[in-house]
Length: 520
Image 1 (tube, helix red, strand yellow):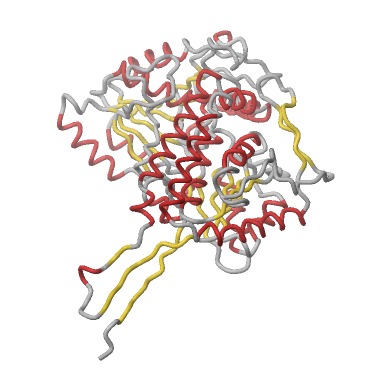
Image 2: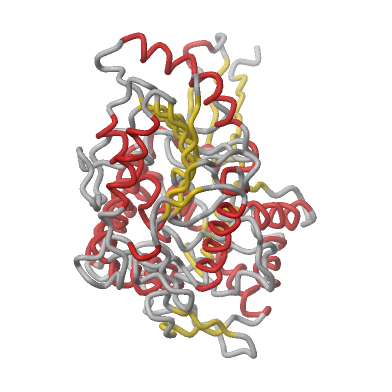
């Protein structure tokens, strides 16, 4: 494999357009990148397409071995990444290492199943005499991966690594808020992958903002549209807003040929606390699921339905835990929740809270609890809203901030109806004491069948790498993404699959070989 040295694509010459990334920590600029010219971008795409042919010819076993070297190299830079993540998008530095470890966990698992997922499938056991049949999984070609800022490495690895190992070339377009993630991928791959098998480019997200989802804005920019519609690009994997997801798909549909698109979009993820739930455990887990990363997760818990028998007790415990968080400068070791990604996001979240209160909701966290939160900065104090209902946007539209609504319900049936009353369908969770009450597990399985979402959790309890401030009872995350399970959604949460063996299926195509050996 060839090796080159670069910090960003050398074809990216100075143009009239550039991006400056502003840190939400202190509103100071932290990086400045020029956009490529249209001609330079076409050249990058062409190099990727040419490199893909040679890369696909490398035997699968060798590609997997190179993937393991990629992981080793990435591990070597892991100490520098948490600080970069903090500066770019505001997550507390004490939590940044968790994303790196999560990246490595997913990468190692995807490599461990690569051979079984990508090898030929023989039908020898059912072949007729004189015949041989098998199915091959072939790469698609050039895959464009567009990633968001909230988990720049975790979201990228879901598609970038399996695409490369499957024999594709990748064009990575990171969020303008986290441009360094694309550069780090490029630096790591240089020594191991063929030149141009992984490239990234810098471009703005859009000229206008979406009102509904805030990973990406409402339309892809000119340069990204150029890449999507290039006849040399064969597949697009997008993680971001519903509005931009629709625009990405439209750009792909109107391009020459028939281009596949995977869309991992927003969520308004619900939780239901049944009457027999372990309230101490459940409250701690759900606070973590709602507030981690300042609520800026596709699968953050944004609405909670609690059985009326335990509603008051649960709310009291929940609020008590929320008040223990420390909002402030995320570079400090004692801070447990940092700023949201930018001033626009902070203003939007505050407006959503104000609108909910004006509509009759009650805010349980007083403003003085989190004094770092001020109108002129990106620091938004966690908020818990009660007396909410589904006439309010706060229970219907994605917040993407440290805010959760809690609503009282009288039955399982009412809870399920409300959980499904959303245009989204990413994850949902049910909390019940299945360990002591076998009938509760049976009830969960009946409820699970009715929920319209991609993943359903029961008492999510998994040992995970991310620290839990304040510490969860079992050092776990209730919204943990298990790499052995397919990550997918329904309704406006998108379509397509990443992780698990099905993630490889999305990034390959099937070719059948049907041989009649004996002709006499």
